[in-house]
Image (cartoon, rainbow, N blue to C red; front, side):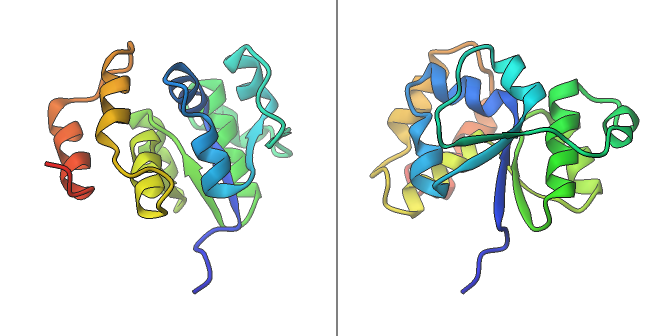
Length: 153
């Protein structure tokens, strides 16, 4: 069965969170390579792994019309320019904008579920526990839902 996407575009928050909890390689194991923008690479503030491809957006008008953080706007624009893509984005306002534009999206928590489904990790509960030790905040309801979907409640 063909994938719904040919390219995976990641926003800054995904890189920051996965780096903080020592799980950034989940992206490599799941997708082989991930694409991001030069704006996001600067926002991340440290060298990204070699398997992260950095591209500039071609359409500089679209990001200015989205009323979003520059990184989120550039990630959405790159996903739009890249054909069938999966956009990893966590910010609620950014997710809504991406959905309005018809993009296929997931968030960092969705990456954990994909990793479990692919057999990369046996359980997402330890990963969720690491997330809870960071300054990233998800509601208890969201955490419960992701654990429930993974069959870990």
